[in-house]
Image (cartoon, rainbow, N blue to C red):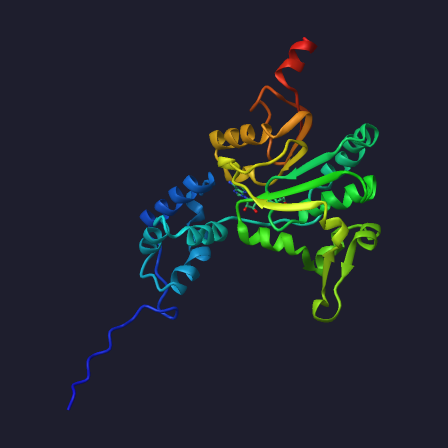
Amino acid sequence: MKSVQPVQEQPSATAMAPALSDQEFRQIRDWLHQHSGIHLSDVKKSMVVGRLQKRVKALAMPSFQAYLKFINLPTQRQEQQIALNLLTTNETYFFREEKHFNFLQQQVLPAFEQQRQPLRIWSAAASSGEEAYSIALLLAQQLGLAADWQVFGTDINTAVLEKARRALYPIEASQRIAMPLLQAFCLKGVGKEQGRFKMGPELCQHVQFLQANLFDLQAKLPLFDVIFLRNVLIYFELEDKKRIIQNVTRQLKPGGWLLVGHSESIHGYLDTLQQIRPSCYQYKKPVDRQLQE
Ligand SMILES: C[S@@+](CC[C@H](N)C(=O)[O-])C[C@H]1O[C@@H](n2cnc3c(N)ncnc32)[C@H](O)[C@@H]1O
């Protein structure tokens, strides 16, 4: 009669979730900083557990240390991206910080209507697309769908960019959009899309999304008239914020505008950025400044 071997315990998705030691937290913090520039303070340890533990468990990794070793393998680019997606904070909504949209409508767009030049606007930390589509809705209303304008949305997180490209949102989110804009440029879901709404196809033709890391900007992007860089600088330390501002400002046309979140002053970071009002900066090329002096 064969003897029964004791069953070796296999790590599985149902196994106990591993705990995160202080040392592992520091290693994850360094890894995230290296790949995105994002800084996690000590109080974010429980956030890291909350966001990564399920993944570590699903992959049957015995510890966070093992997961870190895994994502550091050059062959594991896909898993690196999953970890980045899990560790970024993506809160956003339509027409967030409305003052910037009023500024765009009242101060920036009238000049373009006269110049009849192509208009390029960048939502530089676009998350799931609400900011980029808010801009597009405004441009569609003010300049028309036939005019030459484009909105680019970029983010480091590929999961939110997928949502942005789908352009499909829960119907409750539409409450932040003015009724005339909804009626003119959005579609209400029916049948299996009941309870959702979608950006209309003509509007979507003016909007594109691609991945870009603001900390290490390699993406090929055009020059922009306006850049929305809102509610992202809060995740970086001072020197890294300055580096991001430099990267982003390189993509501005002379005279172009950089808009940051209302709680994110960048006053004094770059001589070439002139603050015109709180959170609104205009790019003056050095030569323009010399001419003025
Ligand atoms: C809180 S959301 C802000 C979304 C939108 N701008 C707004 O104000 O509602 C911040 C976004 O910045 C993105 N992000 C963080 N670090 C980044 C980086 N290094 N490069 C590009 N995007 C980054 C995150 O993935 C996230 O979607």
